[in-house]
Image: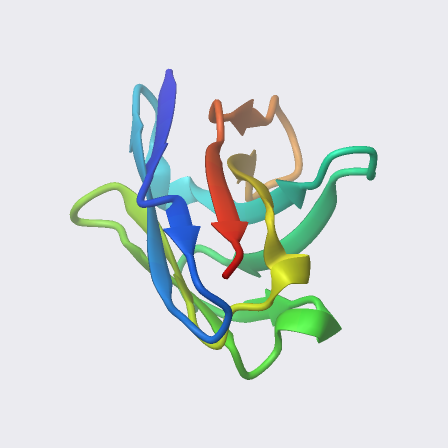
Amino acid sequence: VQLVESGGGLVQPGGSLRLSCAASGFTFSSYVMRWYRQAPGKERELVAAITTRTGNTFYRDSVKGRFTISRSNAKNTVYLEMNSLKSEDTAVYLCNAAPATGWGVDYWGQGTQVTVSS
């Protein structure tokens, strides 16, 4: 099983980034996909989630209207489009896969660093 994040980097405030998480080794379409982030000295927090078939989405309040989560079950990939980035968005962003049934184990990627700074 692998979750491989990409697309992080250094961006100025107000800029945009698109993160990708490529999955392999499990039935991607049967898993709820989530993006978490963890800043230095802070707890890991859920940023966004997307369900399986219906594609219903969830966002934490601080990113609503700026971030968009999407998935391609054909490509086994989940995306996080991030716009109007702020310094407080700086963190390691991690991809998570959780069984939609609620039974089984979660899978985690290694994370990709996003730094928002002028």
